[in-house]
Length: 145
Image 1 (cartoon, rainbow, N blue to C red):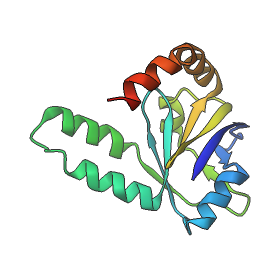
Image 2: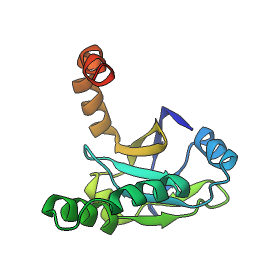
Image 3: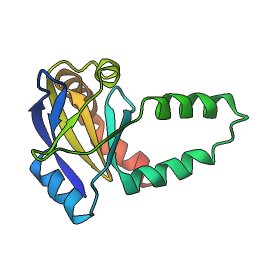
């Protein structure tokens, strides 16, 4: 699916070019529609429609009687935007999402298996630098549980 990291820029009209490797992966899945939304850790998430529908089904199961569930669903879905890449592989990143992720121009596009993450370049570098030292410890915690 989506792997690797790519440095790109958002143009003056708010458009972002999806890396060619990711466009190839989308094409092989017959995915034309993408969904952008607020992500975690200060980034944006982009899902192909099939993965979006799976996440949507999971999140629908969160009881709306729980305040945390309501809050999460409100924030996740209210920020969502549907996008279809144009002929050059560009999508429009809405201003509200750029503001959320503190994105100005320079971004890192990160492949995370079933989704794409968009990070402000400086935020990605900070996250990466703060996280890479504990990668082995994190692997032990996550993979051995």
